[in-house]
Structure formats: C-alpha cells, structure tokens
Image (cartoon, rainbow, N blue to C red):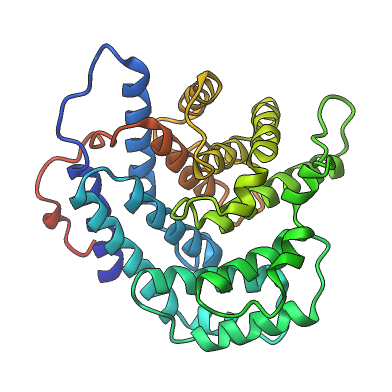
Length: 341
C-alpha cells in the first residue's frame, strides 16, 4: 500500500506542477487538448496497474508511459517526478515473484522475451538494473538463435533493445533490418489495410497486427523518441511516414482509438512536425475521450480493456499538444494528506 500511495503522490505532484500560467482562452483547441491530457493523467493515477488489474504487461506499459512523460513534461520538477515514478514502478516490478517466475519459465514465446528485454531496459534507464538482468539477456540471445517468428518485428525489436542494453543481439542487425516491415514498405510491399465490406475478422486482425508491428519497429529504433532516428531509418523515413499517414485515416475509420494514438506517437518519434491532419486527429482523440479520462472499453487484446489506450492517447496528445496539461479538477490541497490509502 505504501508503494502505491507513493506512486500516486508522484503522479499528483507531477501533474500539479507542470503548468502554472493561465491557458489562453482564445486557443480553445489547445485548451481542450490540455484538459484531455490532464484527464488522462488523472485516470492513470487513479487506476494503477497491478498483477490483478492488467498483469505484468500493463506494469511494463506503465513504465513506458512514465519513461515518455519525463521527456514530455516541460517543467524540470515534473520531469524529476516522472523519473521517480519510473524508478518506483520498475523496482516494484523487479521485486514481484510473478516477474521472477516469468523470467524463469522455460517455455516462453519470442514476444515474452521482447517484453522482458524491454523491462530490463526500462530498469536500466531508471538507474536500477534488474536483479535478473543476466538471465533475461542470456535467454533472449539464445531465443534469437534458436527460435523463428512469422513476424520479423519481434526478433528485430528484441535485438534492438539488447543493443540499447549494451549486449550483443547474437544475430547481425543488418539481417534483421533487411527482413523488417520498414524494409518491406520501402520495397513496395506495405501491409494491406483491409477496410470496407466485407472484411473478415481475420483480415482486420492481420492489418492491425502489422501496423502495430511497424510502430514497434519505430519505437525500438528511436527508443520511444529518446534517440533521433538512426541513419538507416532516416533513409527510409519518407516511405514509412507516407504509409503511417494512410494508416492514421484507416485507424480512425475503423474507430481504433488505441492504434490511432500509437500511430500519432510514432510520427512524433520520427520527428514529423504537426500538420492539419495530425491536429484534426488530435481533436478526434479529445472528442472520443470520456469524462473520467479514459476512452472506454476497446477491443484490446488485454486483460484491462482501457489502460493501454489511456497511456498511448495521453502521450500522443501531450507530444503534439505543445504545452503541459492543466491540473485535474479536484486536486487542491496538500497531496501529502492522502497518506497510505
């Protein structure tokens, strides 16, 4: 209970100190976005992930969000508090017996190795390398050498985060990049965005998975925007941005708020400046947000059907919102009085 209260206190302090100047009432669009970000942060604060609510994957996703938020916060005080939130989130994850059990599970999918290597990277970035770091790395390296995947993105992203960790991916990076979805787009073989009627459930799922996969290639290569796109990606940037532009409209037409937010975030990581289309889709995100700060129960392949969209949509709005959010309503008073509730 103490850790949860500390996490909530960090989030409360961060969002309450981010913005002190009044919002320009003439710019209603900025005001709406700022309010939407605040609502999203409030939902994240009041719905922290746990083993019971969201499981280990949501705990890692929360760490990713804090990793992003510490860069997106304009105020130094806010950045420090989100860095602290990241430290506590990853330390608590590393201490969970369920996490240790996951690491030691002998039969893991390559996707599990991706999440574990990502967790190890977040722990290292938080200044607290995992106690299971060596096991996570050794297993991931062995899995890359011995396991195959129908999705080229999974081995590529494992290798990239191993490289971020300063560890050998065990497979030449050039080979993995050559097989990537990014390279397929450059070669004129982009994912098919199935739409209209009739579209089978399987076709829709294939389109969604491939767009998510492409986004994760961008995420890994830019380290969630912490790194400038590397030269290999810069050479292919126009082709990737062109496809993501089409995918944005497709995701909006499909009503897939979660995927739309991920696409907008990946454009930010690719250093795409805001334009009329991005601003229009940001307003769509704001319009579909519910008063409590979430975007409702979405068809997510997750235990919690709301959290991932709140994390990604809040980050996307903040990335292109140009200003820190206003404090959420009802947040007056000394946050220290919340105690260990």
